[in-house]
Image 1 (cartoon, rainbow over the protein chains, first blue to last red):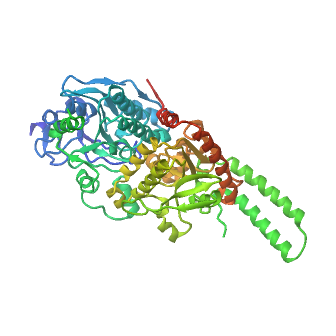
Image 2 (cartoon, rainbow over the protein chains, first blue to last red):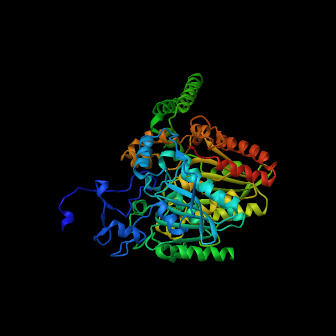
Length: 293
Length: 317
């Protein structure tokens, strides 16, 4: 095939160890080293060569085998809110190296440069048909979606925006856990976001949590599992402790499908598993009915 | 057989000499009291000096001392009466968390804490103080009980973390902790948490959202254990001492950051050397803080609690 003739080198991108769970992402995407020429991707699941544009046009789903590639935060938001209705908020909140932690400053700079994101979450207001929602979506590409002060702050503000405008809140989570480099401040974001959700609940407003692959650690043990309705996609890893930690602790092989969305559904921890294509419609139905509109 | 930490070698040799001296004096019926007194004074000075200069990692080791007082020890020394209450009313009684109602002086409290075991058999029974979801759900049930009867809540934190097991995940470990964080934020009664040993991340925070957080001076509290951090960062768990410094796991650093409100002094040479003094120090602080918090109206108490957590985080805009 002509595509192989220039014999470019390939780099395998694996998840950076920024988050407490240090979970290796299943979606190891093989990218060409030279970004200018990334026309196509080899699917992780079926190994077929697929045009990137085809994947993008198909909601980041492999057109050959249906494998769900990871979506960026803005792609998630565009999937769920009506075109042209999203207004971003808090875009310029930036992380600070408070603990003077080994390598954090450099990692932040590199992450911002590589992802063109300011941190691991995008938040704002959008419309789902006639329903106005406060929405936040996490981005796993930015330091493994790890939650530090900025993620905690932006999610809390998204919840407080819901309170202020009396509208539902939707959060799409994707995370390797708490951001180690911010130490105890990262841990406190769990309490901070959960406290805001308590206020939202008292005000009678819906919180829809959408943990997607992978959601782990401190994010799972805070807002991700506090939705009035929790929905996810098929085959999504949603865990508190990472599979490797569990294996090391109990020295046993883990059951098939352990910690995947289907497993959570069976064990009573998830409300809905829905395909990516149907997620927006389902979200709309859930909100419409909770709000009785 | 006494257990000494690695930085206590000088203390160990002095204590050994002192014990030999006392034994010799008794056996030979010779009065060596002035010698013994001199040694005891020397020992005390040495202990004060050593313990004043401990690094965060060394304090972590004290926090993990096998003779350190645990939740039930504090309850025994602080409470004139205590009735343990069991179960989450859903599935099981988690022995890694102890909870109940009792009196500290004249004030009734609901008291909850992670409980470790003293030797292997007990540790297995207590799951090494690492709770499963049913532990957090028991804690929540008891906290709601406190709310119904307008009782202040005291939580004693001492865990290396929430248990990372298959059943724990099956039964929703993440959900159990998350629920507690949310519910504790909205409780109508004062909550005081004391980190008495190990503050292992979410497992600790799951009973640690409070109006005031106290910490014994030789404890640790962190988003990840020092050795866990070292393994990830340096691929070398033995670099834990560097990690502990970086993470700022010690009481002094955490007070500076506003994460904890008060540092509780330990008896000279660590809480394991005198349970009574350690418990008394905790008790005095708890009672004075409780008195202060009880004066606040419920709405004020809750809003202050919300703001406490709302303000955690450092960023630029």
